[in-house]
Image (tube, rainbow, N blue to C red; front, side):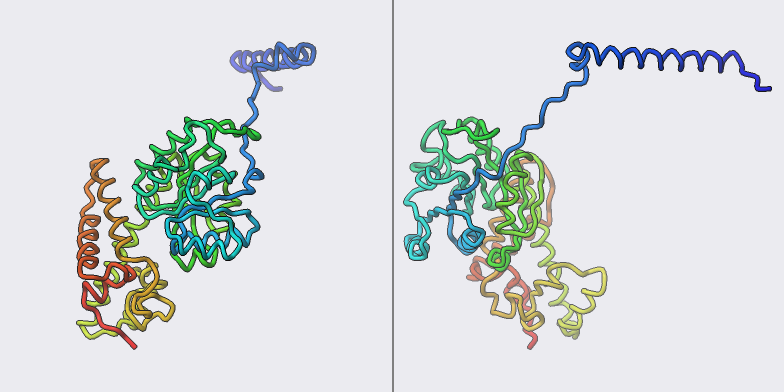
Length: 363
């Protein structure tokens, strides 16, 4: 015989009463849906549609931008372009691409506008200057503005707020206001040409998802980094790590040569040990060790040392803004500034091996 204590009887009684209440509530909900349903009402999630991005404007046709435009055209987008270099514009015009004289004219012809420019000041001018994207005041034609330049997060955030206060000339789907994304890239000129860039994106996640197919026509990876400005923040942190890594590998390889170890041998050690990194196994700074690397082309092409110095300057300024000590940032900036001042600003940033550490070629 099973004996049930008073405690267990009370528990069973409570369970039975709860089940009765649940059945009664379920029956009531069938009869009175208007009274019951508000307790469990969920608002529909707003979704932006990428189908609106048929016409793409592109501003900034340098080494990166020109190649990104070619991939947009290959993907079937209708593209309008602008650059301050008239010769570059003529090349695109001769290819049958629509060219515009001002950023504002690009905006008026586009559903989405992408900018790829050298610095924060250039971006700010293209957005807010005379004949800029926002020249029309609070009314904008583009649904989405994407800045793929490498600039400081503060400028990205300031422009994002400015854009969000504008109104669309023509509302489409759930787009009531224009949106800005900061979406700088990693991979360099070769990845831009091959369409294998990586995009680091900050801003509205819904707008990011809508823009993703467009971005993937120029790249192979997109990473959502969070709020406005976080894409720019991710990029300068990435390039800071890349600069410090290149300096470390270059310093170690130059020291190894002085100690009598061939750079190719030491590279094999690195790449099978804990020192392995992108600077050793994909972008080796020693001429002759890696045929496809800029170092084996007299450091031509690739990522210019002056651009690395610019990005390190952005990282240093951002560190000061947030009160963060970053001694390696300061040291790297000092080294790349010296390399540029010595006349090597146009050479790939891996040239520190030769022009700062006095490393030797290996052929």
